[in-house]
Image (cartoon, rainbow, N blue to C red; front, side, top):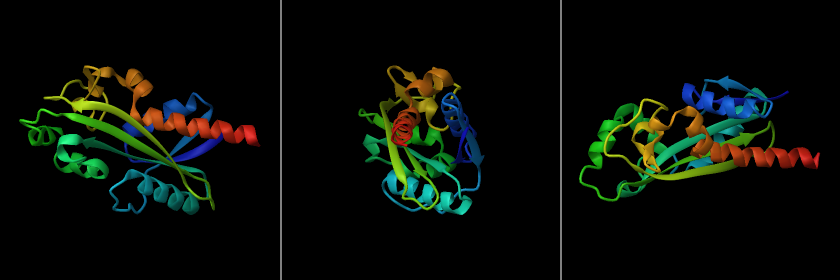
Length: 187
């Protein structure tokens, strides 16, 4: 069975990725010790650097996930700083920032960084477009899920099984799995 180390301290992210990959016969090992995170405006270089750093450190194939919510009315903020904003402000203060805003367009983006020891990292982005709700709704998911609305329901209302079919993380993982499948065809 193929093994991949997934670097995250987030239980929700780990469960989502473990469930998706285990269905493909891939064992996912959680690594909670992070990596030095670059300060960048885009997610791709952060994910690439993290995957390469940990892969070379552990001498194993490594996957990292860098995700963010990008809110149009806030010029893409919090973007790569989403975790920091979530930890220090939370959803209610993000909603407060949007009071009076008519344009509530937003998107979630995940970039999966993957690297094998001694190789160059690869990145696989996934995006889901939606909008910011006017209030928190639903008890499912984690992070910004209760305020991110997709086709009339927040990710917090969808439930994990439904969310995992259409999420930004799922879209990034699907791109990664397509690449992985193409590698086994070449070998």
